[in-house]
Structure formats: C-alpha cells, structure tokens
Image (cartoon, helix red, strand yellow):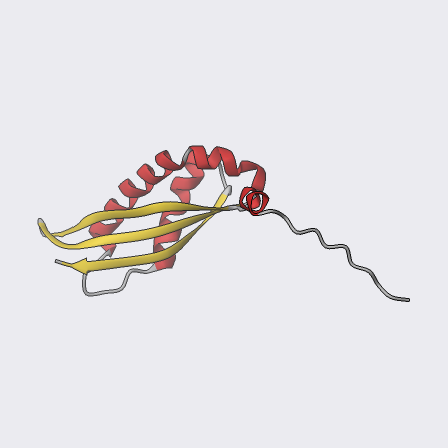
Length: 121
C-alpha cells in the first residue's frame, strides 16, 4: 500500500512571519584605552525569540534593546576588550543576557553574536 504525503508549502510572507530571529542593526562604538581611541568596535547580534507569539512585541522594543546593549557593551569594553585580542562571542552574549531579560522579561530571547570585530586606529 503506497504512502501519500501531503506537503503544504508556506508562502514567503508567512515564512517571514514565523521567523523567530530578529536582526539587531550593527552596534558600533570607539574603544578607549587610557583616554585614547584605540579602535572601532563593531558587533552584529541576532535575537532568537523563544515564543513566536512574542516576536512582534519584541520587534517593537528593538530600539530600546539596542540602546541598552550599546551602554552595556561600552561598559564591558573598558575592562575586557583589547585591540590585540579577538572578541569573545560567548562573553558578549552572556553579558548582554541580563539586559535583555530586564527589558523583555526573563528568558524571552537567546542572544547570538554574528560578528564581533575591533579595527585598530
């Protein structure tokens, strides 16, 4: 007896609506060491929304989230970033997690670092 599979292909629009990833615009700031600019930091982040129903409300809060992340990353950079060392994606994501939890609610998103670079000046 043959098995018949019924497969429905979602349109591009509905696939986009089901996406649980939110791209954060690249975060850029100057890295200061001993009062002098030592480099330009660029960090690209993606938020993975754990509950797809929360995606729209989190997208609406993206500007506030990015602002929180910029402030946090500048503070972190004063102690842990060095132009002679690669940036640690796990450190960055782990450091930002409490800021996302405070803004969005506990454990609403996972944070992934797509790209993290320091360009020396």
